[in-house]
Image (cartoon, rainbow, N blue to C red; front, side, top):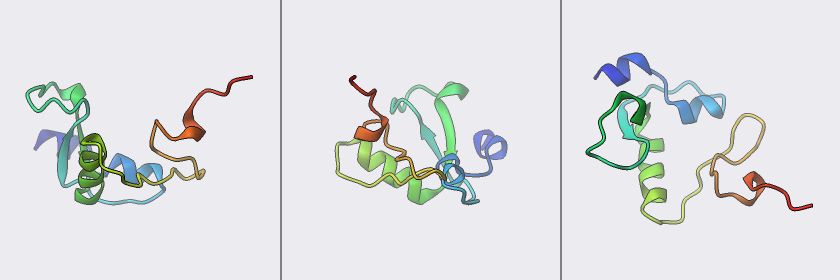
Length: 83
């Protein structure tokens, strides 16, 4: 519960300009055995479920930040431009 105390707001929601309480602890690298603090982050249940589904290869919409940029690092807008 230390993670939720340190990160009381969902970082994905904050990126979209929303203030939503963190209720779930996410393993950033998806390794459930890696409980180092730097691998754990607080998320709301909806964002955590969406991230888990995405990480399992399911097609989901991860949302956008406050500038309208997709949060999905694999979205083509987030890819380096070939010039």
